[in-house]
Length: 178
Image (tube, rainbow, N blue to C red; front, side, top):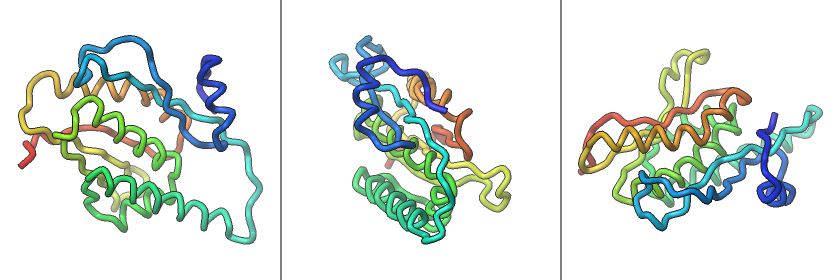
């Protein structure tokens, strides 16, 4: 189910495809942003409508194309995909998580600049019931603000996870970038 959205965001949503995620600008200043003039964004979901089964297989082809586009976007940003085939399979089963992780990766660079290194991986993929997608942030120097910034980003999307299948975690492993 979609989050409630304000009227300005609703105008943007109406032009979007059902099931997509919409990033909207928040006008308040956030002290954790990398630059004071950098706008803050929040991710909103466009409602999914129930779809009939597609006997032609066109839906599975479109999901594959969507996932390939998102993985290409990650590579363009310089995100290291730890195991491409495992990540592809997970995102194929949970395309909502694919869209969310793409949008969150864009937010990470607003909070950390491009000095951050991002790693995309599936944790616990040997146990399908507990597998989840992780986007790990690595920075050159760690201080208290790193986790605080990660938590700020999480606040923008955690409410959406309750409405999705699959799971996504933005985190860090505290390994400095090289």
